[in-house]
Length: 441
Image 1 (cartoon, rainbow, N blue to C red):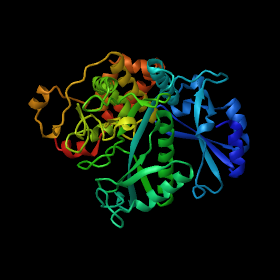
Image 2 (image 1 turned 90 degrees about the horizontal axis):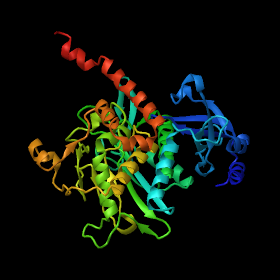
Image 3 (image 1 turned 120 degrees about the horizontal axis):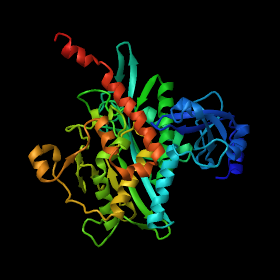
Image 4 (image 1 turned 30 degrees about the horizontal axis):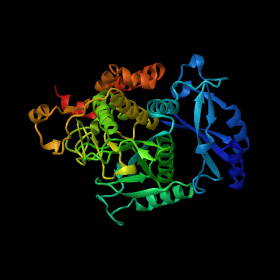
């Protein structure tokens, strides 16, 4: 959409204010609000902001320039704010320059998508779709509690989140975004949205929009919408299973599909999976970048911790869901909602492309329930484990030149700095568990 077309849309919809949004390195969404009258100027010249206050640059060189992407403009539902508003995702540039800012997560994903085009041709499209899982909490005098006690595919009144989901899906429909299905998930108070496939950049933009709307809509109802991977010990966590594929838009061809093979998978798909498995330990730092992520990634809770693949088995790291021809895709299951969506999608693509370029051989699929195997059986099958904590994941990333190059040296260094500090803060914090365990020693 051209800036002039956006201006007409803004006038037609009587939009008064626009949130220029971007994500920081950790994946937190930030908003800079401007009056709608200044959108055209912002789109043409950009608008400066303080990057040091969102941990993206040092205070000695704090200025960054936001340039809104007109294609991402969405008019927000009228019931969220006192007057008509819109949001637009922004690219980040160096101040007084047309040079992209290397630490912009959106730029990292764009760069990797261009790498796919270099490998397969200009008409190649990297598709992504995430299963957006989230919890809803209600506030009580005793703290927060899960909204309901419904279970998988529960119906109202057991499913107390249905009304909120219907409001959000209707608002998204009015913005031209179709939620293909939504439902109550297995745990109490947990729900899921499924979207149609799109290119990975659009999907990341849209996922941030949905997260934004969910949190706003929940807050309006006195609730909390949370993407926290593991809110409670001994209960199911919250993931972001990510489906990906590569298609040639010019030839209307799915590069992951080969009808001549019994499993329907092409050599490209098999090599891509092999790349994901080869880089899985270091990739975890990008797809599961929080301390809490590794409280979810433990055996026994349908969490994918074993480095393996299968066609339909849900206890593996990578599976191939039903659907062939243009619907053939891979599902990378570890990802969770604490990630930066741009960075996670970029990391998945970088790992897969490395497998394709090096023609990595893929081990045999594991169709048995890995949770039922003992350590000896897993070792015999060559099934490894994801890192057990954020510190281990960062150590793996420090050895992975492929993912480092995909991120870019500057981004990698800043990401590791931020996450190492997070890991150090956690390790030096005294928790209630420790007081219970060690107070009487």
